[in-house]
Image (cartoon, rainbow, N blue to C red; front, side):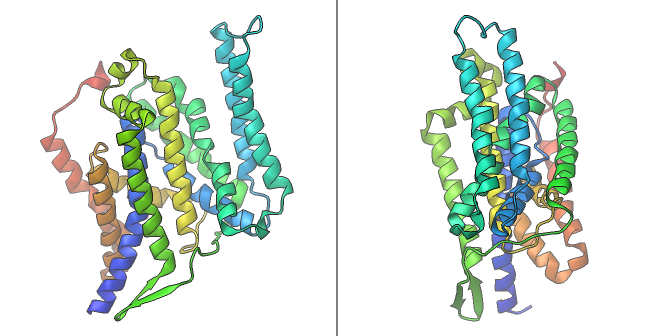
Length: 351
Protein backbone atom coordinates (compact mmCIF):
# COMPACT_ATOMS: atom_id res chain seq x y z
CA UNK A 1 0.00 0.00 0.00
CA UNK A 2 1.49 3.33 -1.04
CA UNK A 3 0.74 6.75 0.40
CA UNK A 4 -1.93 7.69 -2.17
CA UNK A 5 -3.97 4.55 -1.49
CA UNK A 6 -3.62 5.05 2.27
CA UNK A 7 -4.79 8.67 1.91
CA UNK A 8 -7.84 7.64 -0.16
CA UNK A 9 -8.77 4.98 2.41
CA UNK A 10 -8.31 7.53 5.20
CA UNK A 11 -10.64 9.94 3.41
CA UNK A 12 -13.31 7.26 3.05
CA UNK A 13 -12.84 6.21 6.66
CA UNK A 14 -13.17 9.73 8.01
CA UNK A 15 -16.24 10.37 5.84
CA UNK A 16 -17.95 7.19 7.02
CA UNK A 17 -16.76 7.81 10.57
CA UNK A 18 -18.40 11.23 10.57
CA UNK A 19 -21.74 9.58 9.76
CA UNK A 20 -21.22 6.89 12.38
CA UNK A 21 -20.31 9.59 14.90
CA UNK A 22 -23.65 11.34 14.47
CA UNK A 23 -25.50 8.05 14.88
CA UNK A 24 -23.40 7.14 17.91
CA UNK A 25 -24.20 10.49 19.54
CA UNK A 26 -27.90 9.96 18.85
CA UNK A 27 -27.79 6.49 20.42
CA UNK A 28 -25.93 7.76 23.48
CA UNK A 29 -28.41 10.62 23.85
CA UNK A 30 -31.46 8.37 23.69
CA UNK A 31 -30.00 5.77 26.04
CA UNK A 32 -28.76 8.25 28.63
CA UNK A 33 -32.10 10.07 28.77
CA UNK A 34 -34.56 7.17 28.41
CA UNK A 35 -32.49 3.96 28.99
CA UNK A 36 -33.63 2.80 25.53
CA UNK A 37 -31.16 1.11 23.18
CA UNK A 38 -32.60 2.68 20.05
CA UNK A 39 -32.19 -0.10 17.49
CA UNK A 40 -34.58 1.59 14.97
CA UNK A 41 -32.09 4.47 14.59
CA UNK A 42 -31.00 2.97 11.27
CA UNK A 43 -34.55 3.06 9.91
CA UNK A 44 -34.53 6.85 10.15
CA UNK A 45 -31.36 6.83 8.04
CA UNK A 46 -33.09 4.77 5.35
CA UNK A 47 -36.33 6.75 5.55
CA UNK A 48 -34.48 10.06 5.19
CA UNK A 49 -32.51 8.89 2.15
CA UNK A 50 -35.42 7.16 0.39
CA UNK A 51 -37.85 10.01 1.09
CA UNK A 52 -35.45 12.47 -0.52
CA UNK A 53 -34.97 10.09 -3.46
CA UNK A 54 -38.75 9.88 -3.94
CA UNK A 55 -39.05 13.69 -3.82
CA UNK A 56 -36.29 14.13 -6.40
CA UNK A 57 -37.78 11.54 -8.76
CA UNK A 58 -41.20 13.22 -8.71
CA UNK A 59 -42.90 10.41 -6.79
CA UNK A 60 -45.13 10.85 -3.78
CA UNK A 61 -43.10 9.83 -0.70
CA UNK A 62 -45.21 7.22 1.07
CA UNK A 63 -43.41 8.10 4.30
CA UNK A 64 -45.68 11.19 4.40
CA UNK A 65 -48.64 8.82 4.74
CA UNK A 66 -46.84 7.01 7.55
CA UNK A 67 -46.29 10.36 9.26
CA UNK A 68 -50.01 11.14 9.01
CA UNK A 69 -50.90 7.69 10.39
CA UNK A 70 -48.49 8.12 13.31
CA UNK A 71 -50.00 11.55 13.96
CA UNK A 72 -53.57 10.19 14.06
CA UNK A 73 -52.59 7.37 16.42
CA UNK A 74 -50.69 9.80 18.65
CA UNK A 75 -53.68 12.15 18.68
CA UNK A 76 -56.04 9.36 19.75
CA UNK A 77 -53.62 8.38 22.52
CA UNK A 78 -53.35 12.00 23.64
CA UNK A 79 -57.14 12.42 23.70
CA UNK A 80 -57.45 9.27 25.82
CA UNK A 81 -54.76 10.53 28.22
CA UNK A 82 -56.43 13.95 28.55
CA UNK A 83 -59.79 12.30 29.13
CA UNK A 84 -58.38 10.16 31.94
CA UNK A 85 -56.79 13.22 33.51
CA UNK A 86 -60.10 15.04 33.40
CA UNK A 87 -58.82 17.88 31.21
CA UNK A 88 -61.54 17.62 28.55
CA UNK A 89 -64.51 19.43 30.04
CA UNK A 90 -66.14 22.82 30.42
CA UNK A 91 -64.09 24.83 27.93
CA UNK A 92 -60.72 23.64 29.18
CA UNK A 93 -59.78 22.30 25.77
CA UNK A 94 -56.58 24.23 25.16
CA UNK A 95 -54.42 21.13 25.57
CA UNK A 96 -56.69 19.23 23.17
CA UNK A 97 -56.53 21.99 20.55
CA UNK A 98 -52.75 22.14 20.80
CA UNK A 99 -52.50 18.35 20.45
CA UNK A 100 -54.86 18.45 17.45
CA UNK A 101 -52.75 21.11 15.73
CA UNK A 102 -49.44 19.43 16.52
CA UNK A 103 -50.37 15.81 15.86
CA UNK A 104 -52.90 16.11 13.03
CA UNK A 105 -52.93 19.50 11.30
CA UNK A 106 -49.13 19.76 10.96
CA UNK A 107 -48.70 16.21 9.53
CA UNK A 108 -51.72 16.80 7.28
CA UNK A 109 -50.14 20.01 5.93
CA UNK A 110 -46.90 18.14 5.20
CA UNK A 111 -48.87 15.31 3.52
CA UNK A 112 -50.81 17.75 1.32
CA UNK A 113 -47.60 19.57 0.37
CA UNK A 114 -45.83 16.33 -0.59
CA UNK A 115 -48.92 15.06 -2.43
CA UNK A 116 -49.86 18.10 -4.49
CA UNK A 117 -46.69 20.13 -5.07
CA UNK A 118 -44.16 18.95 -7.72
CA UNK A 119 -41.07 19.18 -5.53
CA UNK A 120 -38.70 17.58 -8.06
CA UNK A 121 -38.10 21.03 -9.53
CA UNK A 122 -37.28 22.63 -6.19
CA UNK A 123 -33.72 23.58 -5.20
CA UNK A 124 -31.84 20.76 -3.49
CA UNK A 125 -31.91 22.52 -0.11
CA UNK A 126 -35.72 22.83 -0.24
CA UNK A 127 -36.06 19.16 -1.17
CA UNK A 128 -33.91 18.21 1.82
CA UNK A 129 -36.06 20.35 4.12
CA UNK A 130 -39.22 18.63 2.85
CA UNK A 131 -37.70 15.18 3.42
CA UNK A 132 -36.61 16.14 6.94
CA UNK A 133 -40.05 17.63 7.67
CA UNK A 134 -41.58 14.26 6.79
CA UNK A 135 -39.18 12.02 8.71
CA UNK A 136 -38.15 13.96 11.84
CA UNK A 137 -41.63 14.27 13.46
CA UNK A 138 -41.89 10.46 13.42
CA UNK A 139 -39.29 10.37 16.21
CA UNK A 140 -41.35 11.86 19.07
CA UNK A 141 -44.50 10.18 17.72
CA UNK A 142 -42.75 6.81 17.86
CA UNK A 143 -41.70 7.51 21.44
CA UNK A 144 -45.26 8.49 22.34
CA UNK A 145 -46.75 5.33 20.80
CA UNK A 146 -44.21 2.61 21.58
CA UNK A 147 -41.98 3.68 24.46
CA UNK A 148 -43.73 6.24 26.64
CA UNK A 149 -46.20 3.73 28.18
CA UNK A 150 -43.20 1.61 29.22
CA UNK A 151 -40.95 4.46 30.35
CA UNK A 152 -40.41 2.92 33.81
CA UNK A 153 -39.85 -0.63 32.54
CA UNK A 154 -36.49 -2.38 32.75
CA UNK A 155 -33.81 -1.91 30.13
CA UNK A 156 -34.38 -5.47 28.90
CA UNK A 157 -38.08 -4.82 28.26
CA UNK A 158 -37.25 -1.59 26.43
CA UNK A 159 -34.68 -3.48 24.34
CA UNK A 160 -37.29 -6.07 23.34
CA UNK A 161 -39.66 -3.27 22.35
CA UNK A 162 -36.88 -1.70 20.25
CA UNK A 163 -36.36 -4.97 18.40
CA UNK A 164 -40.09 -5.17 17.66
CA UNK A 165 -40.21 -1.55 16.48
CA UNK A 166 -37.20 -2.18 14.25
CA UNK A 167 -38.87 -5.10 12.48
CA UNK A 168 -42.14 -3.17 12.15
CA UNK A 169 -40.43 -0.15 10.58
CA UNK A 170 -38.38 -2.38 8.27
CA UNK A 171 -41.57 -4.01 6.99
CA UNK A 172 -43.21 -0.62 6.54
CA UNK A 173 -40.13 0.55 4.65
CA UNK A 174 -40.48 -2.34 2.21
CA UNK A 175 -44.16 -1.49 1.66
CA UNK A 176 -43.49 2.23 1.19
CA UNK A 177 -40.30 2.23 -0.89
CA UNK A 178 -40.09 -1.24 -2.43
CA UNK A 179 -37.06 -3.51 -2.61
CA UNK A 180 -35.15 -1.35 -5.12
CA UNK A 181 -32.39 0.89 -3.84
CA UNK A 182 -32.09 4.61 -4.60
CA UNK A 183 -29.51 7.36 -4.81
CA UNK A 184 -29.94 11.11 -4.72
CA UNK A 185 -28.29 14.13 -6.30
CA UNK A 186 -24.89 14.99 -4.86
CA UNK A 187 -24.55 18.17 -2.84
CA UNK A 188 -21.27 18.95 -4.58
CA UNK A 189 -19.51 17.58 -7.68
CA UNK A 190 -16.29 19.42 -6.91
CA UNK A 191 -12.92 17.67 -6.89
CA UNK A 192 -9.97 19.05 -4.95
CA UNK A 193 -6.45 17.84 -5.69
CA UNK A 194 -3.93 17.67 -2.85
CA UNK A 195 -0.80 16.21 -4.34
CA UNK A 196 -1.62 12.70 -5.45
CA UNK A 197 -4.89 12.62 -3.50
CA UNK A 198 -8.28 13.65 -4.89
CA UNK A 199 -10.83 14.87 -2.34
CA UNK A 200 -14.49 14.89 -3.38
CA UNK A 201 -16.74 17.80 -2.53
CA UNK A 202 -19.41 15.40 -1.23
CA UNK A 203 -16.98 14.04 1.37
CA UNK A 204 -16.18 17.58 2.50
CA UNK A 205 -19.91 18.31 2.79
CA UNK A 206 -20.44 15.22 4.95
CA UNK A 207 -17.48 15.96 7.22
CA UNK A 208 -18.34 19.67 7.45
CA UNK A 209 -22.03 19.14 8.26
CA UNK A 210 -21.15 16.47 10.82
CA UNK A 211 -18.61 18.75 12.50
CA UNK A 212 -21.11 21.62 12.62
CA UNK A 213 -23.80 19.37 14.10
CA UNK A 214 -21.47 17.99 16.75
CA UNK A 215 -20.41 21.53 17.71
CA UNK A 216 -24.05 22.63 17.76
CA UNK A 217 -24.97 19.75 20.05
CA UNK A 218 -22.11 20.68 22.39
CA UNK A 219 -23.29 24.28 22.71
CA UNK A 220 -26.91 23.11 22.96
CA UNK A 221 -26.15 20.90 25.96
CA UNK A 222 -23.85 23.47 27.56
CA UNK A 223 -25.75 26.72 27.03
CA UNK A 224 -29.49 26.11 26.48
CA UNK A 225 -32.04 25.43 29.20
CA UNK A 226 -33.60 22.44 27.42
CA UNK A 227 -30.15 20.98 26.77
CA UNK A 228 -29.27 21.25 30.45
CA UNK A 229 -32.60 19.61 31.28
CA UNK A 230 -31.67 16.68 29.03
CA UNK A 231 -28.30 16.40 30.74
CA UNK A 232 -29.94 16.47 34.14
CA UNK A 233 -32.35 13.71 33.10
CA UNK A 234 -29.45 11.66 31.82
CA UNK A 235 -27.50 12.04 35.08
CA UNK A 236 -30.39 11.36 37.46
CA UNK A 237 -33.88 10.65 36.15
CA UNK A 238 -35.54 10.70 39.57
CA UNK A 239 -33.71 13.83 40.65
CA UNK A 240 -34.78 15.59 37.46
CA UNK A 241 -38.41 14.74 38.21
CA UNK A 242 -38.07 16.08 41.76
CA UNK A 243 -36.84 19.48 40.54
CA UNK A 244 -39.66 19.78 38.00
CA UNK A 245 -38.05 18.55 34.80
CA UNK A 246 -40.56 16.57 32.74
CA UNK A 247 -38.92 13.28 31.86
CA UNK A 248 -41.66 12.54 29.32
CA UNK A 249 -40.89 15.77 27.48
CA UNK A 250 -37.17 14.99 27.76
CA UNK A 251 -37.77 11.60 26.14
CA UNK A 252 -39.70 13.13 23.27
CA UNK A 253 -37.00 15.74 22.73
CA UNK A 254 -34.29 13.07 22.76
CA UNK A 255 -36.18 11.08 20.13
CA UNK A 256 -36.68 14.23 18.04
CA UNK A 257 -32.94 14.92 18.03
CA UNK A 258 -32.16 11.26 17.28
CA UNK A 259 -34.62 11.21 14.38
CA UNK A 260 -33.15 14.46 13.04
CA UNK A 261 -29.60 13.11 13.14
CA UNK A 262 -30.65 9.80 11.60
CA UNK A 263 -32.61 11.42 8.76
CA UNK A 264 -29.82 13.89 8.08
CA UNK A 265 -27.29 11.05 7.94
CA UNK A 266 -29.47 9.35 5.35
CA UNK A 267 -29.63 12.54 3.29
CA UNK A 268 -25.84 12.90 3.45
CA UNK A 269 -24.94 9.34 2.45
CA UNK A 270 -27.61 8.88 -0.25
CA UNK A 271 -25.49 10.53 -3.00
CA UNK A 272 -22.52 8.27 -2.18
CA UNK A 273 -24.13 4.84 -1.87
CA UNK A 274 -27.32 3.10 -2.90
CA UNK A 275 -29.69 2.96 0.06
CA UNK A 276 -32.26 0.18 0.45
CA UNK A 277 -35.26 -0.01 2.75
CA UNK A 278 -33.35 -2.23 5.19
CA UNK A 279 -29.89 -0.77 4.61
CA UNK A 280 -30.06 1.64 7.50
CA UNK A 281 -29.84 -1.14 10.08
CA UNK A 282 -26.22 -2.02 9.23
CA UNK A 283 -25.23 1.65 9.21
CA UNK A 284 -26.92 2.21 12.56
CA UNK A 285 -25.24 -0.89 13.95
CA UNK A 286 -21.81 0.54 13.15
CA UNK A 287 -22.82 3.72 14.95
CA UNK A 288 -23.85 1.48 17.85
CA UNK A 289 -20.34 -0.01 17.96
CA UNK A 290 -18.98 3.51 18.33
CA UNK A 291 -21.52 4.23 21.06
CA UNK A 292 -20.48 1.05 22.89
CA UNK A 293 -16.86 2.22 22.85
CA UNK A 294 -18.14 5.27 24.74
CA UNK A 295 -20.03 3.05 27.16
CA UNK A 296 -23.34 4.56 25.97
CA UNK A 297 -22.47 7.45 28.29
CA UNK A 298 -19.62 9.59 26.97
CA UNK A 299 -20.33 11.71 23.89
CA UNK A 300 -16.69 12.53 22.98
CA UNK A 301 -15.54 8.91 23.41
CA UNK A 302 -18.53 7.67 21.37
CA UNK A 303 -17.65 10.08 18.54
CA UNK A 304 -13.99 9.00 18.67
CA UNK A 305 -15.05 5.34 18.68
CA UNK A 306 -17.28 5.90 15.64
CA UNK A 307 -14.39 7.54 13.80
CA UNK A 308 -12.25 4.51 14.67
CA UNK A 309 -14.98 2.25 13.26
CA UNK A 310 -14.99 4.21 9.99
CA UNK A 311 -11.22 4.00 9.60
CA UNK A 312 -11.14 0.31 10.55
CA UNK A 313 -13.88 -0.44 8.01
CA UNK A 314 -12.09 1.47 5.27
CA UNK A 315 -8.70 -0.19 5.72
CA UNK A 316 -10.30 -3.61 6.27
CA UNK A 317 -12.04 -3.29 2.90
CA UNK A 318 -8.58 -2.99 1.31
CA UNK A 319 -6.85 -5.80 3.16
CA UNK A 320 -9.75 -8.25 3.55
CA UNK A 321 -12.90 -6.90 1.88
CA UNK A 322 -14.84 -10.14 2.40
CA UNK A 323 -14.36 -9.89 6.17
CA UNK A 324 -14.60 -6.14 6.75
CA UNK A 325 -17.95 -6.40 8.56
CA UNK A 326 -16.62 -9.20 10.75
CA UNK A 327 -13.54 -7.17 11.64
CA UNK A 328 -15.61 -4.08 12.50
CA UNK A 329 -18.11 -5.90 14.69
CA UNK A 330 -15.39 -7.97 16.37
CA UNK A 331 -14.15 -4.67 17.82
CA UNK A 332 -17.12 -4.70 20.17
CA UNK A 333 -15.98 -7.89 21.97
CA UNK A 334 -12.81 -6.58 23.69
CA UNK A 335 -14.59 -3.32 24.48
CA UNK A 336 -17.46 -5.15 26.20
CA UNK A 337 -15.03 -7.38 28.09
CA UNK A 338 -13.07 -4.36 29.28
CA UNK A 339 -16.25 -2.52 30.26
CA UNK A 340 -17.61 -5.50 32.18
CA UNK A 341 -14.37 -5.95 34.11
CA UNK A 342 -13.74 -2.29 34.86
CA UNK A 343 -17.25 -1.07 35.74
CA UNK A 344 -19.20 -1.73 38.90
CA UNK A 345 -22.43 -3.71 38.78
CA UNK A 346 -25.60 -1.60 39.05
CA UNK A 347 -28.79 -2.90 40.59
CA UNK A 348 -30.90 -0.05 39.23
CA UNK A 349 -32.92 -2.27 36.87
CA UNK A 350 -33.46 -4.90 39.53
CA UNK A 351 -35.08 -2.61 42.09
